[in-house]
Length: 152
Length: 207
Image (cartoon, rainbow over all chains, first blue to last red; front, side, top):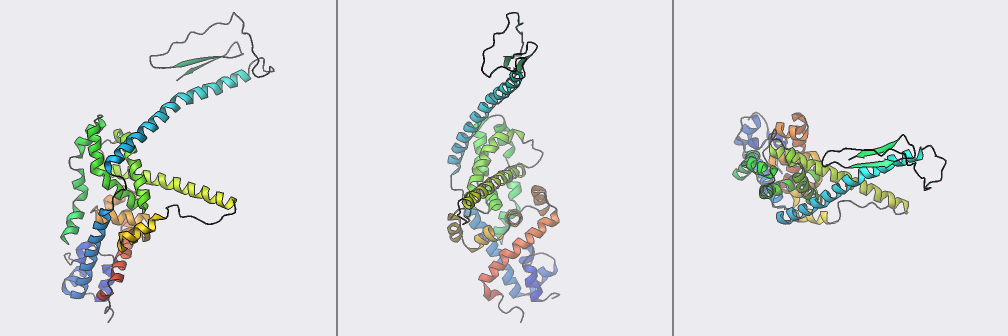
């Protein structure tokens, strides 16, 4: 035997399974095949690892798969509704913010907020074309030369 | 150890068998195929989550989240990697997000307690965990409690499920040498525990 039992025991703590049962060609494996004491240790380590594997496999999720699928379906729908709401709300909020900036920068910036301003009748109405499925909003501003057009 | 070898060496390949048809069906909108896919991998997702988090309650939460993400992101699976590798990454990502949320919540809770003059720190994993571990047995407790996240994942994949260290390295984004280092440390912890509970096996070593 090229290695002694103390060394073998140390090596067994990190060895590959094939070394634990002496079926490999390493020095440790040769020792395990020839030494009953180290072979018993190797066998026990394998038995206990197998037991650990079975005990872990017996740990199951608290929720069964069918209930989990149902729960996931509900959660998906909830998230999808939330995403749709965001898809609608985010551009509107952004457009409102841009419009607010333009309104604040208008030529009559000295006016009080909320004051009603009569637009001149001669103002040109915009004509905006959008592709099918696209939405558009047009915001008037106090600046004659500026309109806010928001595609979303 | 026939059971050990049968369980361990063939699993990665066995799990992939017949999966392509289910994936294609699910990607085409077939709910039945999607559900079959989930049924097939449900326990495996839980086990990955358990190995990642080391906590049964967290593993439940991660598993549930993976089902939602799987439905949303399955279209993104292009078959260039193994499905199990891809699903493993989805699980790890969900576990990482949960961990971030828990850590943030624990930090906020601690800050609130410190602000109110109460300074005790509560384990965010909850009080049932220890009882669960006691019931589960000694080696399971070592696996869940004493191994680091990395050691637990590597040991679970290599020694308990038969993945090659190189493959695990690719899955975890580690060099194979790092995988082996985690694996050896994990084996040492588990095997020391085994020998501690069987002192008769090693009592006359050194004589």
